[in-house]
Length: 281
Image (tube, rainbow, N blue to C red; front, side):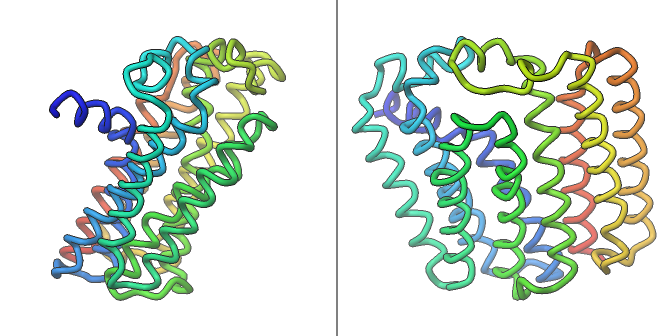
C-alpha cells in the first residue's frame, strides 16, 4: 500500500501541485482578507486537481518520458505501474478534486478549464510547437483565480486579473530556464524545442526579456489595487529588482549562469508577500 501511495505521489507531480495550491491560496487571501472555512476545500480541491492533471499528463506522455533521462524512472515508463492504473489514478484524483470544490460552481468551472487547457491543449501542443509554453502559461494563471472566487471575489475584478497575468507571464521564463538545462532531453524525445531553433546566447536573451516582463507585471499589480500596503508594494518592487539583476547576470554569461532556481524563489517571495498583504492588509 505504501509503495502504491508513493507511486501515486510521483504521478501527481507533487511539487507542481503544491505551487499551484500556494498560488490559489494567494488569490483566496487577497479576496477573503482573512481565513474562513472555505480555505479547506480550496487547498484540498486544487491540490487534487493539480495532482490529477499531472498524473493524466504522465499517462499522455509515457512514450516521451521513456526517452528522457529526467523522466524515464517515473512509474509508468519504468514499468512499475501500468498505463491503465495510471489513468485510473488520474481520474480518481480529478474526480475527488471536483467533488471537494463542488460547493462553488465558479471554482469547479475554472478547475475544469485548467484541466482541459493543460491536458487537452498544452500537452498535445508540446508535440507540435516549440512555443507551447506561451499558451501553456494560462495553466499557471488560473489557480489564483480559483482561490479568488472561493474567497468571495468575482473573476472580472481587475485585481485578480493583474495577479493572474503575473503568473501567466512568470510561467514562460520558468519553463524556458528549465529548458536550458534539459534541452538535450527534449531533443532526444523528439519534441520541438527552442534549443534547436536558437543558439544558447539567443535563447538567453529571449528569456531575459520574459524575466523583465515578469518583474514589470509584478510591480504593476499595485496599480490595479492588488495591495495598498506600502510594505507590500516595497517588497514586490525589491523582489522584482532582484530578479532583474539575476536576469542581467544570466544574459551577460550567455545563459551559463542559470537562473531557474532564482525565478522559482522569486515566485515564492511574491506569493508570500501577496498572501500576507491579504491577511494583514
